[in-house]
Length: 94
Image (cartoon, rainbow, N blue to C red; front, side):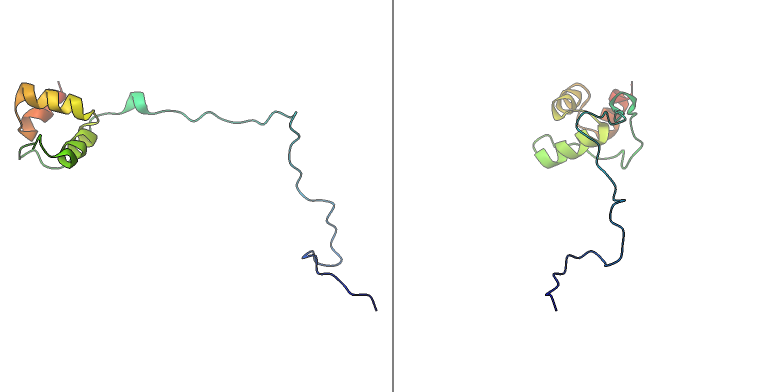
């Protein structure tokens, strides 16, 4: 009796019909991923009350993300309109 090696392939199955990978020469149909960067609209979100603390980097990052602008743009808006969240929101929605 011969020693049998377990190959992990069930006995009696036809393994010739395995999925084949495309050759390097074959073109694969791929779709481009579309960017939505040009269609982002200001969100209606959270509080309109309160003030922005320009000395807190975490708060600046949070509100910059909410307004979909950079922290530099947010600082500029705060310098022009004051640190009121409502005023900054009005200014940015013009």
